[in-house]
Image (tube, rainbow, N blue to C red; front, side, top):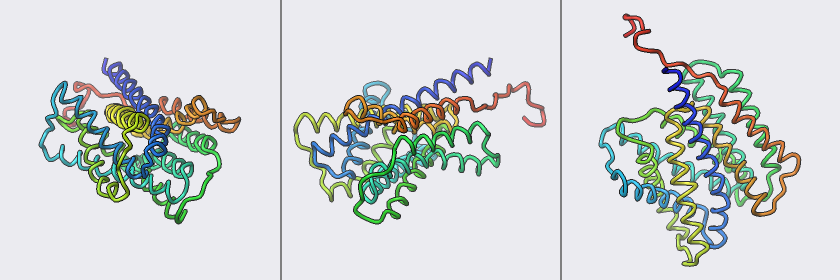
Length: 312
């Protein structure tokens, strides 16, 4: 009975993570549209994304169960960690984009997340990754490299610093994945996403104000900003934090690979881009990595009656 319940929870968690990855993948086109139609700096887009996402989730909470957040030390620590790490992730990623290129920054950031998660999980548990985990990780890395293709475009600064920023962004998101996996009493995924996004956006706001945050009041940029805050941020982070409660951290790390996969497929359908044979092979390897990650064996919960008295 416990095994069946555990399996259903694991399946729901994996589904939530997949929803998050697909939603994140739509953010690239929305962000690019906002940048061109609104003439906004990437840092300002990141701040708008987090702030609007936090506002949307907060509005939903106020209309349903209320915005009450537990005032325990554990709750405060969790929300501070999420807010700071989201700000670090967004700022580091967009710094990497400026210093290198969009393709290179995305490839390093997204590709490094599952690697950091596996390394941190191995260090924490003291157990070597399983063959299944290593196979999924290798398939993901190769697939991502093939999908992204050779980086194009030059940045405005040092490529080495840009690569460092991309790795910092990947490490920041991997830390979010690991740090928020264990639930805090009274703090659900909706409140975590709402306060975390608001805090992260507030931390980025001073720098965004320096480069300009004015959005033209035209339908296109306004719609792009609202969509960016609602779907790839509010919905995606809520789904991600929900999935983290039952899915393994390695699966969560691999789920982020759906972002470049979804973005590439949308670009093919909506913008007429062509992946080519190599790109489609990369997309296939990402799908294989996600499928293989679901085969990872999970420990079966032990019933209380099965635990020896000395261990209770």
